[in-house]
Amino acid sequence: MSCKTFTYHQQGMTLIELMIAMSLGLLIVGSMFAAYINTTTTSRSLMETSLVTENGRYATQVLSDEVQLAGFFGFLDNQEKRISTSPTLPNACIISMTMLTDGVAMPIQGYNNVGAASGAAANIIDACLPSTDSIKTGTDILIIRRANTSVASATLVSNDYYIQSIATRYFIGKGSETFPLTKKDGTTAEVIRRYEQNIFYVDAATDQLKKLVLSNGGYRVEAIADNVDGFHVEYGIDYSRNGAPNESTFGAGDNFVVAPTTISAWQNVVAVRAFLILHSENESASVSDAKTYQVGLDGTEGPFNDNFKRRLFYFSERANNISMRRENS
Image (cartoon, rainbow, N blue to C red):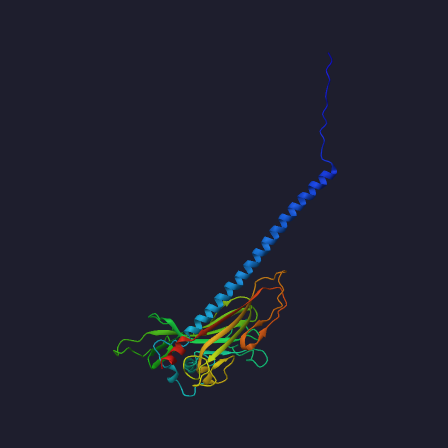
């Protein structure tokens, strides 16, 4: 009886099958990579937008809070009547009793379109600025004066400025001085608060919105927001003395303006509205900013024609410490 031997031959993939498999694999990997890129790009875009929004909201909140507090000088109710009948427009870079006292009557002040045609001089506050800073051309400067909302501690900083007030009187001095005002009992010293003079501006070198804070006989700098393209401020004038910058039969001329030109106008500022343009930290190839941005009475800014994301922020705030006194007078 004979045995037969069977041989089995194992066959591999043909070249065509291999090419099809590789093509399908590349297609799948390519789709996954494209999905990853799209997800990453979308995520980065959302993050950039979120950062711009957060940055802008914080900046407008800081400015809005300052405007609300402008004109708060403790218990001083009629600061406009307690100064010279012909005060000078305070120069915030000159830190003197005369300027700080006149500043009590002008809690809100500013400069429009610094360095631009028909705007304020480019070096208008150079004496206040750090040597590395300069004002971004075409942006505004906002100055807010007030007392600190917290009562000063018993130990005053010798070179800081403070204010003490009782209804119709006030005293401004350095921490090294003796503050003379007392409460109704004639013995207990009235509370003392630090005198605040804050200057907001956009630094040209860094595009940061910054704040100069009166401190220790000079100024220290605080950064508020990054990537600021535009900062424009308008001032609500209330000649009618009814607490609102709306023209009425009692006072023609009440309205918002970009740059009050007289001391009387500055003394009657009761509200502020402002426009801020901020851009993203990084450029994106999918973005092309050819838009223009309406910035109130100053017109428009743009188009910037670059690849940054931008947002326009706006706020309108009443200076309560100034306007509410007028309502009740």
